[in-house]
Image (tube, rainbow, N blue to C red):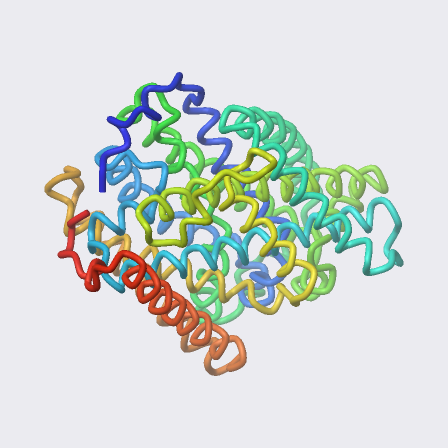
Length: 448
């Protein structure tokens, strides 16, 4: 694969700094993690969910190190999939991984869009709002953010910076008032579930950190990637971890695990209400809409980059790489259309953990690629190996827990993996037939 740092596109004016890139990742993480996921993670880890966030954050930090080192060496706007291509070549394993990563991104984006719709409907129309309003508002968030991303990386980053700035202020207020009034007996270790349950929940809380990968898609918009990319990566992950831990302590210090699970997407707003009244509920509802909107923005930004890169390498159909009539990348428009279908047709709360498990598999493969390329990237083998061991352990525990307690979800994971394999196989057949050169996909590992 050609190094995009030397391409004409890379010579364009650089528009992103460390803060802008970090905020793209932070906005993606916060939207997916706190508002759309806390209830589900709490159902497993209970009042110890903050500890689950700490463990998941540590794993994300190790993976962030590996990803940043790869990003510095292979400066591609394709992000993770470009690094997988460097590590594994353009064989079937890479192709299946690329489709899996794409599917996980679609699921995550659709899930947070629905969360936006849930908060918006509750805030604007009350708890008894018709279900259709959730769909309308979720769809609106996707359409608006497509328009923002169509204006370019600079516009996406500016919108994200403003949103995340407001969110940080709101979270500061929420953390202050909930921790001051926290019922610490609700957080006592005696209320924690079994250790196995806490560890099994790490796969779900790791889902909350997936947005850190968005930072890598900004590499060609940075003036000095070697210095700025790692800083943006660690700033985004560290900021998200601090928010998750403090907010989860405040939430579970105000509500029991059963209440958090019952309130679901609006749990944070409910937790703010005892201290701040209706104003607190409104404040957190608005913050949730901003957070989930920023997550949709960041994820669509990433999907536009990744699909364009894969289409350019002929790993995705060429239609993904063309410009649409509205000026946005076709991959962005196609992906947004699929997100609209997912968010309006499927029960995404039932498949959130599918997206998390799929993403963890991708990051495990990324660690393998990082280990194979460590001499080129200057990465530490110890750090990469530690990330591999921890990611594998979490995946195994999560798979066992899901198979025992939610076999339908386990089957869904297998089906999605099989679907990625089938699509990869069919597309390679079509591509090779059109090129008249069977076997194009069988390049050696590390080749381009």
